[in-house]
Image (cartoon, rainbow, N blue to C red):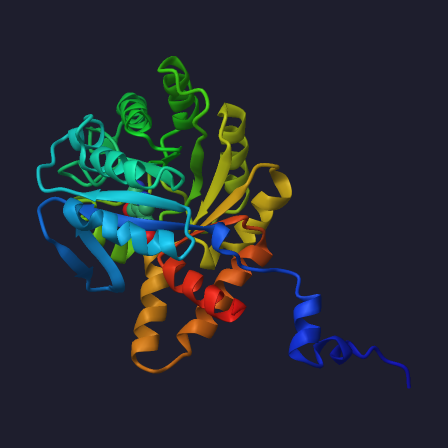
Length: 325
Ligand code: PBG
């Protein structure tokens, strides 16, 4: 009887390492952080153990922890109380994310700061753009989004990452950045962003839940696959330098589709709900957190992601450092 002996290549740790197809590296990660107004604040987000809202005075120390673990890309989200109809806090030059960017960039010049370009953390209604007739007005929101991107670049952001899912945001932001002299600042488009229930814990962390309705008129229907390719394709045509798929875990097929159809770096966002599920199960002693996280993030690489945005970035960096010793 003839058959294939696949187990030959699984016979030992060294053999398995030799034939391993996908790897996690600390360079793959972008670490998201929440900056809150006030002083001496470090609030743990209840649904995200290990993730904190940190005030500006404690921020550099927080960032240093990540930096010393080898992380070279972070993303800031702002948490403020004075919100208004148009999300002014997003685009003023002394906005919380702009200040955080300036401060951290001064301490760590080679740390890449990725700016999440959206209005939802700054609007009193919690939507990602300007409201007209109970819905987000696409073209008017674009004007504010472009202003936000330019103010972030001016503060020193290295990458602009628009996440509000308005049509044309890449085109409008590219033009605004170019006109302001930031022709070398790349755009990481949240091109493929689904209207997902996996964002729940983030909306607590960033205080950005919509106060009425939902985001289904701008974020994508989780049932759709072909639409993801249309979104990615048009953003690349408009000038996107990276394409993001979000969430990651339930959308690994989409990560693969985008990888197969686009030739720009693909980013997967391992979102707050994915983090919360693992933390909750781990705290109950139901799973092995380290093994599960490494398996989950490696599966994102296997699906075709080049870069992973994850709240686990520091943990993984520490594990990788340990394992290399
Ligand atoms: C802003 C934004 C959201 C997330 C990242 N940027 C929230 C949303 O669309 O409601 C979610 C990230 C996460 O869940 O970890 N638009």
